[in-house]
Structures are given as C-alpha cells and as structure tokens.
Length: 411
Image 1 (spheres, rainbow, N blue to C red):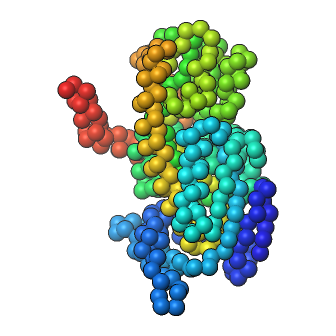
Image 2 (cartoon, one colour; image 1 turned 45 degrees about the vertical axis):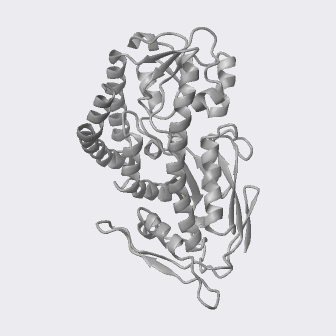
Image 3 (tube, rainbow, N blue to C red; image 1 turned 90 degrees about the horizontal axis):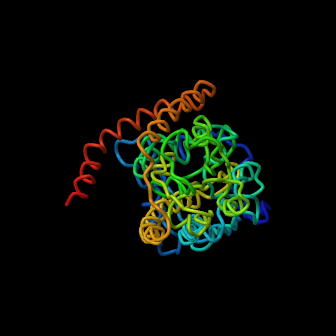
C-alpha cells in the first residue's frame, strides 16, 4: 500500500494487519520507555541468518527493576521500502540541530539496511519552523523534528518535552525522560491531544542567557525589553516588565536587523554565531546562564496512525536512532561551544546574571508554574511528580557532582 503525505511517499505492507484504528493507551504501555533500549540490543544481536537465508528473531528481556515489557523483534531480509519526508524547525545552516535530524535519519537507514529512508527538510521548505507539530498531527507530513515548547500555545504541557525554567540539567532531563516516567507521561498526553508519538533526539546542554546591548543589573532594566525567548520563560519575562517575542531560529537575525527586538537567545556560542545573534548594533553583553533551559530535548514526532503501520523492527530502529542522536548532539555541542566561546570573548562582554535578577527570575518562575497548574489539570498532573524528581535529583547531584566541579576549579 502506498500513501502520500507532505510531499513524501510512504509504502507500508498490505498485510500489516492494521485496521486503521488504534488503542492509544495500550500502545503507550507497550511501546515506549526502556523497551526501546531493549530493542537496541535485539537489533544488534539479531543479524545472523540461518541456512535458508532468513534472519532469526531474538528476544531481549527488559532490564530488571523496570516495568517495561520484553521486546521481541524479528529482522527480515525483505522489509518494506519506505521513504518519508521530515519537517524540521531548523535552518540547514545549523550543523547542530539540523545536523541532529540528519544523524537520526542516517541511523534509521543504517539499522534497516537502507529500506527505511527519512529525508529531513529545513524550516520553511515544507512548513515554517513553528508549524511542525500541527503538520505532523494533521498528517501533512509523516515525521517532524522540533522542540516541544514551541507549542505551549496549544497546551502548556508542551513545555515539559523540551525544558522547564529552573528545571533539569541535561543529564537530569534524560534521567527523567528515560527512567523517571517523563516520556511515558508525555507520550500519553501526545497520543490523546495530538495523535502522535515522540522520542528525544537531541539535547543542547545548559544554554546561554542571551545577547543584549545594555547591562542588566536589576529588574528595572527589564522594563519594556523586547526579547526573543520561547515558551513559559516568556511569561516570566513579561511578569517582570519585559515583552516576549516568539521566533524560530532562522527569523531572529531579520528581527535584529529591523529593530524588532532588543535582546535574543537561541542556544549558545555555536548556534548563536551561525544565526547572527551577535549582530546587534552597539556594545554587546552575552549573559549566562540560560535559566529557562538548563538542559533540553528536541524531538522526533510521528502520527500514531502511521507509526502503528510500521513493522516492529522499523519502530525499534526509530527508537534506537533517536537515543543515539540524543547522545551525539550534546557531545557535538560540547565540542563546538567551547571553541566558539573563545571567538565571542574577542568582541563581547561575558556576564553572569546578577543575584538580584536570578532571584526574581526564580520566584516568578514558580509563580508562573503554579498559575498554569491552577488553570490546567493535565499540566498540574505532570508538574507535581516533575517537581519531586527535580528536587530529589538536585540534592543527589549537589552531594556528588557539583561539589567535585567546585573543587576542580580550585586546583
């Protein structure tokens, strides 16, 4: 059976046994979480053939102590040939984030012997950078690569998929998603709200706090400040007197050139230089930390109706490729950002947000989160366990990791 979506052709087997409907809750219980990692071992170990040329299936048990089911994937030599387009939120120039989409697609192809091809398209080629999720939801394109919090206008729950202000570091975000129940909760929400499934497929690490043409010493310096800033962090800024401007990465430089914004943030040294965030006129101040994004996740997203038609080994390949891209992307950022920071030091003043501002940001963040939870029961249902996880893991990392990093700088 051949189907058209978003300009791409997809071919699925006629005998897939899918009747066009799906039970989202039963799927979610069986299809996500650590099962993807069990499937990784399955795919890697199931590459021997018997005498008839058929590939033997292998069953891999989920790690002990988890509630994930065992995953059994039988690899076949003649899986269906499928080719999908992937809408992304990133300009092609972003070797990090658009590169993450490319890396993911390459791994899917490699794991399926080239039979399942996904073609990432830069923002604007299929849809705009802030239109990816709705287009995937409506099956205008069979796959997407985007940041969940771009869509808090659809639901504030979307914030959890990328980063929550004053929330989790990159390591902690991965722990929450993969082992702390975060991905299960998010995909249950995604299924019910949008009819999609998503997997983390890239992280940036802690981000910078943005570019400004004046020093920020107190809350009064935020009055009337028009800043490109995403998600619920924009509500925090507005509560303190600033103005949120929401833009995809490729539209930040034109906004700077037109004088439409007074400050901007995207990720950090590498991406910011590529996108031209340093091209404000006048003196430049590059602030840190990005308190709204201490650790992030970008996602690959798929309509559940199409996902359920995929052979199990192709679903496993997607989960494995996404996890691989998640690791690869943060490693890429950590290598690139340290070098590009040295370039920025040559023309901009690197500043830390003063304690007064950080305290105001933190207090208002908690007020915003509480206010959203009071208005949205689904947000509240995730916020409560998320906060418990945040506080618990912060205590642990404070004992183990932060004390080491503090002492390391003293030698």
